[in-house]
View 1 (cartoon, each protein chain N blue to C red):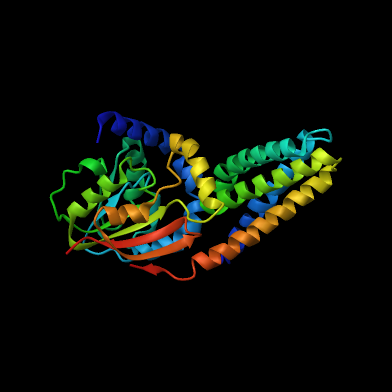
View 2 (view 1 turned 180 degrees about the horizontal axis):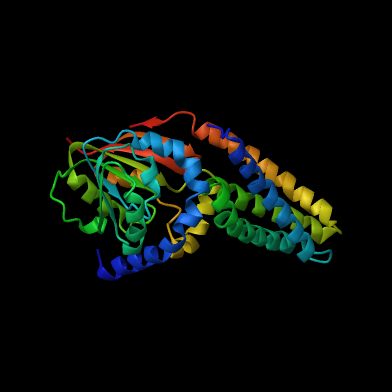
Length: 206
Length: 127
């Protein structure tokens, strides 16, 4: 990825790190808790967790897993490290850009994301990298918000994106399609709120 | 699936009906007889979008959720602003009437979004 875009992305999320726990730690996380807990309950083997942010999701991880968590923002990771200390398994955090991961091919059994591909600058390229580091037939499990097919919400999400993306995520991404374009086979898409908040489970080619 | 946790149902009600009421009040205060009805409706719509967005991305999000409150609050704001803006451009509208109209519109938005949500979350899609 272009260095300027990488720096811009890092700076945006460094800035957001100061308020993320306050803005998202109560309402959204409590609302999504049962769905995230259920999604993450399938954690098995060597796990890559993409874009850990400030670590709000750690509370939903099943105990005693082997997880590497990455994020592009060092300020996010500073906060995440404090929460990671309370986790009972192995939770290693590294500063890393999904477009440029140093992991060898087929390093992980599963990949998890949580509200990540609303903001990865080149989502298909990022997902292709995740497919590369997954073992053949490995699963990606995602909790994401996306655009909508339904009027008037589709129109609203398109209209809000130019403002929202300056401070945080895009609101109109076609993430399910991006997962397919990156070479994954969709196993299940489950809508959590309208067709906007959803879980996506997909498999890398065997 | 329909949200059944009382805290979040109350939050959804506050987000939709509350935003509708606030926008109705603001539109009635800003727009008066003598305005062209289309202009009143357009100004009310913009006010509603801004108020809904700001409330949805700040106070309502912190307390009750993200998209689940931001989208209905913004839609309630837009519709309440349009309706009250158009009505206030034609004749005097009392503040109480404007707020209650906005709240009713917000309630309608909440019912619509619950119904659509129940339909869209009914069963997962399998690839």
